Length: 151
Image (cartoon, rainbow, N blue to C red; front, side, top):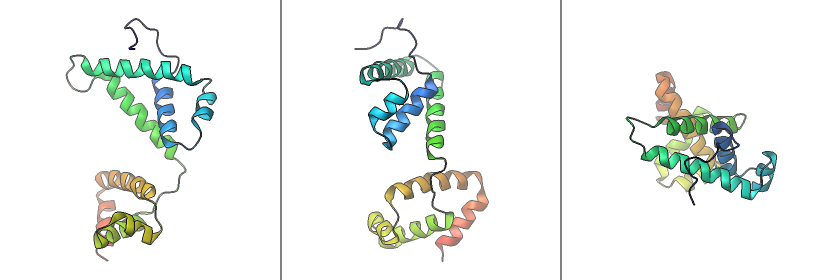
């Protein structure tokens, strides 16, 4: 059942909602622990999630030029939450990432290549996201990466 247009604002800010969505998806803590830390139980979380999902759906349906403001704000909040969640996590160095990429190209089987190098798919994907962004913003990083691939 969708929330009515006059439903009160959810008790979590958009930033707090996005952070909780990210934390639940990461699965580092149990769902119960995460909800309890926010002072929520399953029923309260379901109501909050339903309200936000309804608002996001309605924002997509609204006539708007470009990305609707609520969608843009949620996307930014989600990206900030993901970045905060990953802060302090170990990241493959550029060199190790390039070596893994080269091994994937050589073998043609990403999972076998990563297993051979002792790298998890999750770690490789995290490094891919990080280093691709850096290469786009800093051409010298891209040059270092390409140079290492040619070894």
